[in-house]
Image (tube, rainbow, N blue to C red; front, side, top):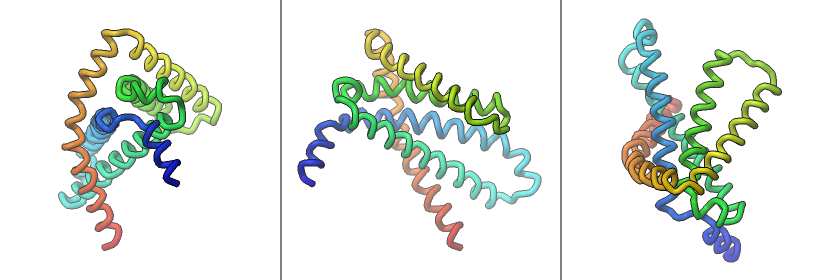
Length: 182
């Protein structure tokens, strides 16, 4: 067991790179959740009181936090599984375009299909093209020096989102838990 833990920690990306990646994920996911929430608030006002509105906001923020944590977990697991030189050494730089492309693609796909199920083949094709584009962009960001510097600059700046959205997400999950129990 000790050998396994030593192996995982040796292959895992640096904590500051993980924090920067988490900040960018939190920023993108929470921004999308807030835009969607405030888009729906006028219709919510017709049948919800202020307490219910804040409850719905807690559900939005709690789910956005969980979604961000799951995505970070998957990206970190990927970094542990593949060779460190390929991915973990450039964790935050490579994840900047990956997360951005995935978020933009998910938003575009959801807008395009208007929440109607189109079958598994179009979804698989869209996902495959998205992942291929994300990988190409990630490699490009590592190879092109000015893109790498720009990504590092951005990732350092968005790491502050951890101090904003992590407490909001945890409080939101606490509120959701209390609402589910009582």
